[in-house]
Length: 237
Image (cartoon, rainbow, N blue to C red):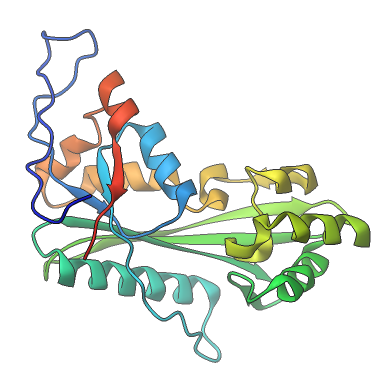
């Protein structure tokens, strides 16, 4: 996608379609993540957005809780995005897996992925996702969602097979609840989309509660057209 400003999309007012869409000049919402799962969730919600990943260092602080670490990482991503695009709303998120006081992010390599899966095998753990919404230097709004996941016992050959698929490599806790890893998930208590990486209900609520009323109306701007075209290619810069 070429660099430059986007004028957004104008949604037809009620009465001109069959879906009661609110008349709103869509404000640009930038997703500060390259995660396909997060883009899929926003697209499913019918919320128009563009992808503009924010690369920040995710260094854990000794003694810091998983919830606080996720919140800090999400804030850093939102701040980085807001610095580059001060006139746009930035949506950032960070997901971590918590078990036995340990914080599991994305595995460093396949051996680390296998280690994480052995730790999760046959047990329950928590998944936290922090979400941050920010525009420029203005006040941010955010929340942390937590879900409980039970993983079935995994044999060594299952772990080796799953790691070899490559799916665990970019996933917090080394598994994808909506992918091949679903065969090992016994139950999810709480938000399923939270475990995927972006709690849908929380995102909708934050958009509705945002200080910019136009952004709040954006959450209701879905239409068949926006469901097909709401996700745009990653922005440069």
